[in-house]
Image 1 (cartoon, rainbow, N blue to C red):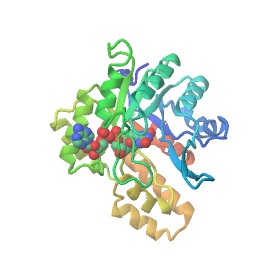
Image 2: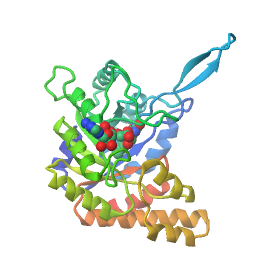
Image 3: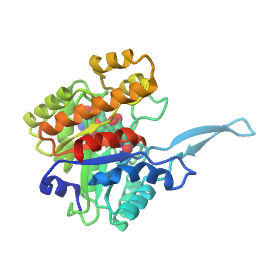
Length: 309
Ligand code: FAD
């Protein structure tokens, strides 16, 4: 079933999950152990992220260097096929522009169609490690809006093959000059054919409510689904703002400071904060909540028990 149908037909809000493919060399048990404890909460779909290839340079005997592709994770398509088979749930593979030529993306879409996968998330992806600005791959796409258009016109061009989700940034994408411009670029993704938006994680719901209001004022009418992650370690207080260009509210950081590096206490503070965030989002009528699991389950399970039982 297409995800857009769930938004139209579900009588109550529901959770969805996002996982990262495991490192190459492990078996499917690694993902099953993350998902098994969460499936009783009936997530309607599970997103699987995609990570661009990285490169290393090997010195050759004659003194020159050869570039070698490093593909460190199991492929998104393989993980999707395994989840679909085991749990009979919709999967949403992420398709990224970064590092891919158009024909490679088209070939992935054929693989997905072959597997009966009718939902995708279309994203630009990020720069290579060490690269300052995103550089489009020759023969590929520069912006996610172009990718959305390409997916829409895939196959016989009737636009019916895939339901397409795209990313949104309540605190602005780090490259955008301002939030208003960023929202206009997001609107271009919807006008290119995106069916719904999932947001970057945020820890202050007011930021999300303001973002949704601005999107609606800009004429964006598709569902906007909050993306949520419970904070779980002290390290994340520094790492998450740096990696995702988001703020962590002072009220939360001061609670963590008071915990004085007690790992369990910090874990519980993050989980309780997330439960309060989700209850507030549900009371404001969101149609669904998307959980970034980052392959941790205890805290997500606790949040689901409190908010979706
Ligand atoms: P775009 O929508 O293309 O926007 C990128 C930047 O370009 C923005 O600043 C935007 O304002 C600007 N822009 C857009 N169009 C134009 C235009 N026409 N002219 C000028 N500027 C423009 N990354 C991964 O690598 N793999 C994943 O699996 C993954 N999953 C994600 C899931 C979610 C829900 C989210 C929110 C993000 C995810 N990301 C993932 C991260 C994402 O790839 C990065 O944030 C990336 O930097 C931007 O992707 P985008 O699709 O939002 O890009």
